[in-house]
Each structure stands twice: as structure tokens, then as C-alpha cells.
Image 1 (cartoon, rainbow, N blue to C red):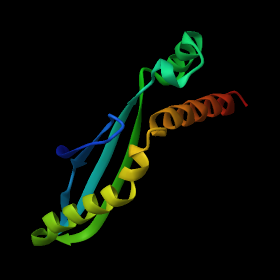
Image 2: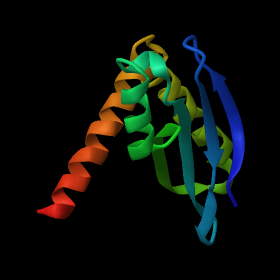
Image 3: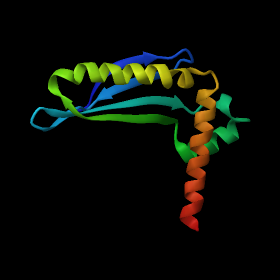
Length: 125
């Protein structure tokens, strides 16, 4: 079962939610699985005019999601909490500065838009 274990508010008004879907897979060994998710709204400030915004929303929708999954296998039950905190701490020290940058929302939306357009073009080839 997936449950939200942490909410990280960023300086650029985005929020990262950390979900835990850890499970036991053999005797006392567990798969610690954390999913980091950040919703980025597609807004007019990212585009040159409302027409471009409408075009973008037709392709990617009203928002795009940054998602990252981190897994650690073979974790004994008594170490789950420590491993979970270590993974979150590592994510905060490495990814949060990147996600917090003031240009991240605009650049991420444009990147996802480009990926979606390229994917559609490949499906026609």
C-alpha cells in the first residue's frame, strides 16, 4: 500500500510528496520503495501568449509530474525506518536544490512538452 510519508515545500512554490510503498519480499527482508512526486502546473508565464498555452495543454494537460522512484532491496525489518530516512535525506540534498530553482517549473514543462511531441512524431513514422 502506498502512503504519503513526507511533504517537502520548495522555495518556488512547488511541493514534493514522498510516498512509501515498502513491502516484505522474503522472511525478514524488505524492499524499501520511495516514490517522489512533484506536480508542476502548465501556466501562461511559460509561453508566448495564450495560444501557445492552449496548444501545450492539449498535448500535456493542465500539469506535468516529476516522478522519481528509489528502491533498496534486502533491508531487515529493524532497519526500514533508518534506510527510509537515509534515502529521503539523500534526495533532499541532491534533487531538492535542482527542483527548487526558480526556472525549474518552466524548463520542466517545456521539456515534457518536447518529449510528448517527439513521442507523437515517432508514432507516425
